[in-house]
Image 1 (cartoon, rainbow, N blue to C red):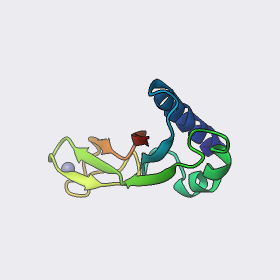
Image 2: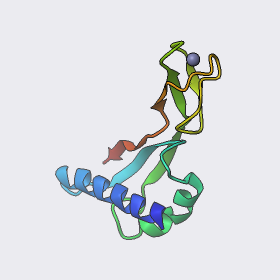
Image 3: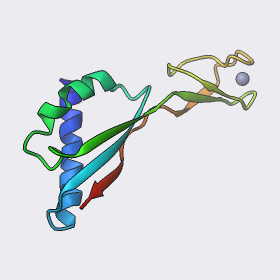
Length: 113
Ligand SMILES: [Zn+2]
């Protein structure tokens, strides 16, 4: 499953950070996941417990921050909400638009004690 390997990647990041500080315990981890990141949050939640078993994140609290998609129109300079990469601008109809938010998939913060 796609989400399983994503969680394993997150485990690795957290493990590296915890090791840097001398094998401390990870208390919580905060993730940012964009609407257009290609990650199903439900699937990630579902696989989480299994994927973090026997890892530094086993007892860590997880917080997911969802980031909705936002694009910018190059013609009329307006921003608009979007859920696709190729939406035309709802204000002027231009297709010269670029995604500015929503592709995020990252560890925002890790609390280590
Ligand atoms: Zn526009």
